[in-house]
Length: 382
Image (cartoon, rainbow, N blue to C red; front, side, top):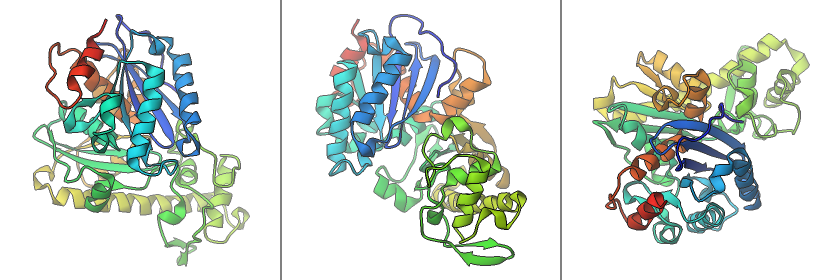
């Protein structure tokens, strides 16, 4: 599941890793900050660290240079939240240890305002490393668009991040805090159970209760609307059945105690569009909550990222705002639409890689934070 492949220019490629609980996304840039390639792999981390080990092997298979001493690696993560770990601190330490063991000494962990940490300093600085991938994206975006609202809609979650005057002005930094401010919405376009979106929904001209069962997910909705690209549909369906339109109709029918044959495919597509509207309203309500705290961004454009950014584009149209696709900002070594598509879908991995490439290019800059000197030395090592 990757963008067009290109070879690194020079001897020091930079790999940006976004290690989530369900996917690992990796970008490759050259030392000059030119994006060369992007990949995504399903990685059910909650089932065990061996899945991360296997994903690392797949990354090495795709880019053999990634396992050489020439490569630099920059990591951000959200995977520490999975219930494999007793708490987030243990999760950060375990993920950092697994990556450092396989990637070698030239790996740095993104810690936001705390700078870049080593594996060793992650233990003390885990709070800054935990679930900071949104901040990497926003920090990089702030260098390109001084006033914007970043909306990254992925398979599982949505981030809504304000950027004003070239600075990230989010009111919270932790998942707990961001859930309170509306900057984190725990809904996405692939893995979210439909029973988590609504208690009641209209069908056949009447409002009906929704079954509180994992009979269907948002992937079923967006298969039926035609908006979910197959390359982002990496997880089994709710019933482990096919990912066809017919199978998706069967699954969403179960949500209201019906069978797919009871009405036409067109009616089930209309039903899927109602689910879409409910999810769009939820994300829109949180966007309103975020913008209310930042009146200076009342007319700012939305910057869409993630495989569900089509919903961000829809919100921009509804609010008569400008819209910028993150992928058009990240660019790439080739002028191809597929580059922009993958860069936008894997925005945190692209951003953390480009931030690291910029840092790597600043010889002698060791002022960022705890562990910065050793990390910069690692990045600059020949």
